[in-house]
Length: 547
Image (cartoon, rainbow, N blue to C red; front, top):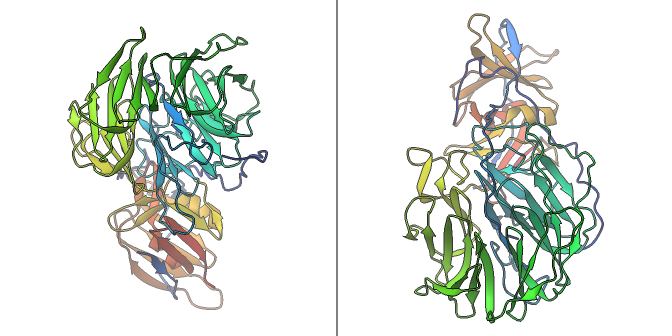
């Protein structure tokens, strides 16, 4: 947690709410890769009369302006069994049995340059790490020192699959078959002309969309916009190109401009994408000597395949095929230009090449893993129960939790947090600042919560030195006062028919500052006469009037 009570760093806090936004309209259709309940009901709480101090001002998110390091290697995507009669998939967990009530969990996870994108079982998309070019699905004018908790992408819902090219451009498919994209200086918007998508693969220059009928189309990735100029304003829509010669496709992957498709019969097909506007990709041709393949991905310019026996084969640009770690029986694989991640049929993870920790071989402390994602500086694993684990570089908490070693590193995998929704008076709070679970409580972004409530939150500073002296939160006839670093607050009841009364209430933790936003323990809102509930299993904080 970053705390700084100097007015030089905490001056005015922007309110970034998306609750007034409705999801963009989209046509109807269908199906997409690359994967202690605490209730507080308010009683009568009263408090002391506020003393007046000289200056009052709201607060700001910290800025971080680093240059983009470039793009990561291309990714792999496969069609789910719901979209095609195949069990092949990547970075995903199987859909839950409709008769079984399950806790919320992650179903897919993707790693890029200093950021992570994850799909939750309720169809929401969550991101964490650096936001330089809008890669977190929000405006690139919003910068974080680091994300202390997952951020829910506004406007995206009912998502069935995700993909990221690693360099900041990502895409998703919704249950109605529409495709959406964001990053590269853009906030989420629908890709026109697609109504029956099953999955997408985002590469460094091209994106592939696998349709529900087993055919494939592609479009060229948009050029990045300059930082600070992201928008959803009208621009030339992507030109879709059908890939000739492809049908019955269950998985796609990219290596630069080389496209690859795995068909239901276990054969692999390839073609050339184009970098010239208006020109067409080449016709796909079957790669000879490859059959009985169950999974494909790429590393640099080489194709990696898994056969029906769980053996991995590497095929170079000249078509030479060599065995790759045949001592392992593998079910999933992911790679970038530096290293490879393998998931064995026993659920263990192995990493080879220039790995994110410098160590090769079995990744310790991981078991029962269903899938992996090879981010550039950090690695991710998805367990069969929907838990995400991260390790490697963690400068922006892209691994999912604070760094555990010097230099912003995580050498032993850490569990990523599950994003928590905040519902205010029955409406989902669409804030760019996340709720952050701590060892004692869950902290919520008070500026945005207050705005959604219709309350007034203010930061009071002293004239001399500009240091923050206290915060106030006013709602109807109640005013809460809390000082920095104190785990208690005072509530005052201001009623014209009754004398003003006061009461001091203890908290689990003091007011904080996470991801650049002023946060408070959720229990504090009890003092406003509200019913406040934190349901851990449902990953939800509910704030409402007392019935």
